[in-house]
Amino acid sequence: MDRVPGIIRDEAKGEVARLYKHADILLSRTPNSWMVMANQPFATKFMLPLTSTLMRQGIGSVLETRTKELAIIRTSQVNECAY
Image (tube, rainbow, N blue to C red):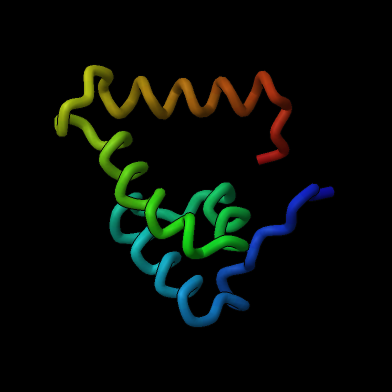
């Protein structure tokens, strides 16, 4: 059971729908965490450029994108995330 429910893509309207569209473009997907953060679209729209910059290779990043993704997956496993 979710502690904070996310906004399902099919139910997204207005600002949230735009956030999902841009997340798909910048991150190639809309992570579950973004669906939860979409409950506060004003704050989320400032996080999107930061996250996409941090996750991309190059752009001042030391770690390879693959290494970052593996760290994310392992963190999810340690925290027993259901996804």
